Amino acid sequence: MGILQAVIDPKPERIRLESVFVSNRAAEDSSDPWRPHAGGTNLDPSNSYRFHNGRIYSGMTRIVWELNEVVKGQGGTCLVPGSHKANLGSAQLQTWPQAADDPDSGVWETYGCPPGSLVVFSEGLRHTGAKWIHQGNPRKAILIAYNHVSVRFHEPKPCMNPVVIDGLSEERQSFFRDVWVLANKR
Ligand SMILES: O=C(O)CCC(=O)C(=O)O
Image 1 (cartoon, rainbow, N blue to C red):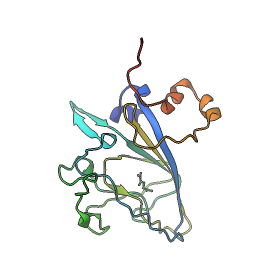
Image 2 (tube, rainbow, N blue to C red):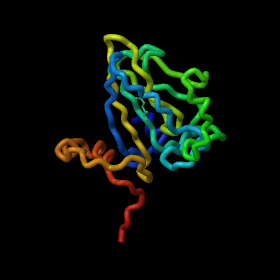
Image 3 (tube, rainbow, N blue to C red):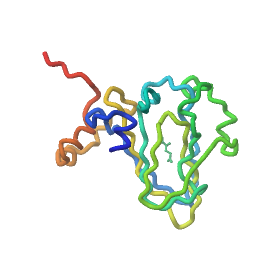
């Protein structure tokens, strides 16, 4: 929460949880998850990322819980550092240089980490999943997108179980609130 408050909004009630998915990949899987997206001049409010007066103002922010060990170069999320602030090329205008999306272009970075680690990045950063090649140790990760209450990127899914949500503390329930900032008092 401290990280989210530092980069999205200091008020916890202004932070929404808008999407969760699970990544479960084994070395034997034939599908190729290399699908670079986002990055470049940020035109989409959900991918907004600004630095002003000593702090970050981020829109959609990705938290990856890596439940198994990730060995660098064996399938962790790949990222292009700085691409969320690039003043050239744009994913939305499809002017991001195609050559840079080659995994060997030299702009991609990745990480290794022990089980239980968190990876945090702005969804405005150019990033992609990568083929998992670690034999006998599948990629098991939970990927959560948080966003500012004033914007929503993902289609709302009616799968949030009210029994589960009603059982959460009031503070946690506010993660699942609708998209608005100002309450109409009239
Ligand atoms: O599976 C991955 O590592 C990539 C995650 C991703 O593409 C995303 O967060 O939008």
